[in-house]
Length: 382
Image (cartoon, rainbow, N blue to C red; front, side, top):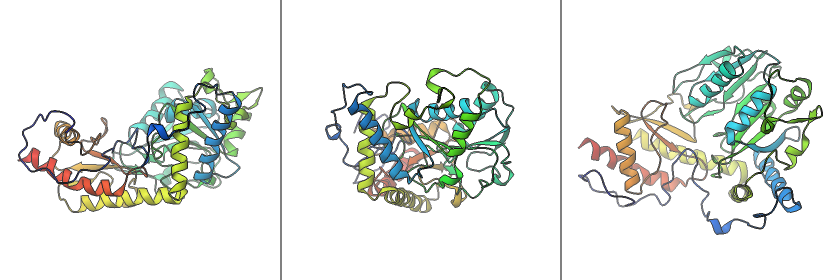
């Protein structure tokens, strides 16, 4: 038990706890076997611009390229501000050349709507859907630049594939892919801009973002200058050309080399479990185990009703009759017993549970969670 029980226990505790009860949707569980003393430390205390610092940053980029199966046509760079910083960097530097369409079916997509509408004042076309649903993807006009989240972390809804993205699009596709990369196959020929952070499927640290640019995005950067001023941390251009150093480990500002070494550990672990296919298989197995738990309980359900668009990473669940207060008590009971951490749904989402099923979680721990969900339910209902 991690802290004093605040509710008198009226039902027996399950016999087995998850060995690693880390089910947060960000920062997410560390890879199995992780410990601080397993991180390389030679780069710590050294300049990121030293030969060693640049080499470790480049190695991190090379590992990401390999695991993402990223084509040579796409550049990949480490940038400030986690996924949010990476996506806003893309918006501030490339939007305004064409009309914009924004898709929103959860809180982070709504954030991009706010940026486009109120900050950049672009008068975007907005396609919305309620939590648990997708907008009509067939309604997207690809003469526009299009902003969307590949996997809606706070709603448990993802786009099913890239078939809805037009091959002959005139606009750019901007994919916030932070809970999707390493868990799904991404069709890179359909993606002009993608962003993510290490803290999701890799179980890495936050504060750093990753920006991926396809050739059409580079063309936009080199042919268009936005009307608004850009802060230094957003500037991707130098003397009218793409600042190629950013995509070779020469970061715009000082990175945490400890976070970089942590990401390298996660990437090397990912290679050891089968690379991209191994990571996807682990996420699929975890989501499958959780789905079996849901199907066996009439008081649990999926917020995302359609299987084809249901996330296999940030799985959002409904709880029969639950309000916000009930969910807080439910999550607190499990945390106090060391059975599950951070599984309450996102604050803007309908009251429910959110259980991370990404690759750094072990399926056995998802399976062990089922009896604990029953225990918390019975404890609060008794």
